[in-house]
Length: 303
Image (cartoon, rainbow, N blue to C red; front, top):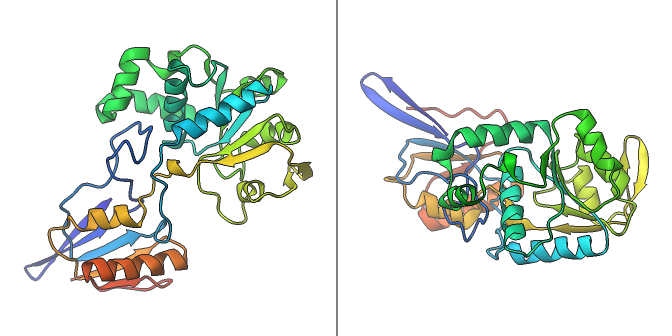
């Protein structure tokens, strides 16, 4: 978040720009958290500019582990591979930690796990330099099993040659690769090869925006265009919605209730119009604040 204080004629005004707001600090609601996340309580400002991405959606509060384990087990038992399009930062790391936990507890068979995203690999390396930010869950896992970079059967495929070798293997594997919405990146090569085979599973763990390849695949289409070719979709397609890192409406309201005082004005940005409008109505009803959905190129007076 960015906080700006403007002092003019002896009077101070404070602007708070939220950026993306993380979920509440509750490992049961957002399982698999690698780092401490979520907004700090007790904020105060005169003008609040806030995201509204999940203003009209509610996160499932169920634990994704049982469903994830069953999906992976069934795919591996029929000789297929699991392809997971994943955002490179935070989402990939969260998913790897969950997989490790499921394998170590015997809920998922031990098969090769490939992280095929240079950015995700760099993010893992940076995460490991900042252990002070880890959740207690993550600290315990690393203390027990060591660094993810040293986990047996977990491969971090940084080079193109390493990436190509994944597709040469005919044995079941779990491939976590970017981009998360299948708009580009190395995941395209893996999907092009594996989408036509019904033994395989494509597992989405992130929001798929309309117009993206990920949305097309998730929506039940019979084919999708990759590298100019129509690729038939015969693989199983599944989605787990619990992995989102954006706070939903109840979580946003939970945070806003901790403000020391109401902002004089609040503007909602970033979300789609229906999401922003629904969040505005929820905030006005629950908090009684002056909340507006920001218009394109709208200017607001500070102070």
